[in-house]
Picture 1 (cartoon, one colour):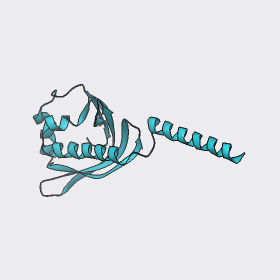
Picture 2: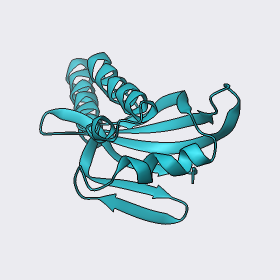
Picture 3: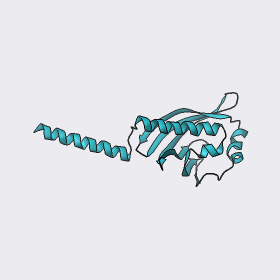
Picture 4: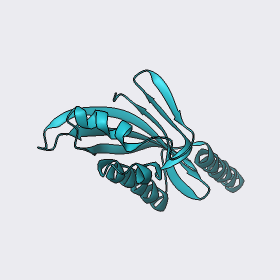
Length: 154
């Protein structure tokens, strides 16, 4: 009598695990995690290089940014110019940014929520500020990219 109950409980457990993977859980397999972290590394590296085209290649479109009390939507690549994106940051003394942490808090097969914190720095290495953010990275058309950023940065 115990074997059928044990088997039944195991089947329910596997069913729940499968559902968690499609609806979000705190786990992600190692290769998917590596791909997501690689996208975030590329995102930061191309941002620091002030290479707008390469930076936007790490996005999914439409791309959303919620900051300073407003939602901005970028429908496709190539709609902005580098001067308008990077000049205000540079005027404030910014030279580069660096991730302080990136913690995956929820994941499914095609969407990952990442609790992040990054800092902005001047050329001399002094810190301008530190900003908490939530990034949503999605897998669309076979590739991972940053779909949404919600940040406390200006």
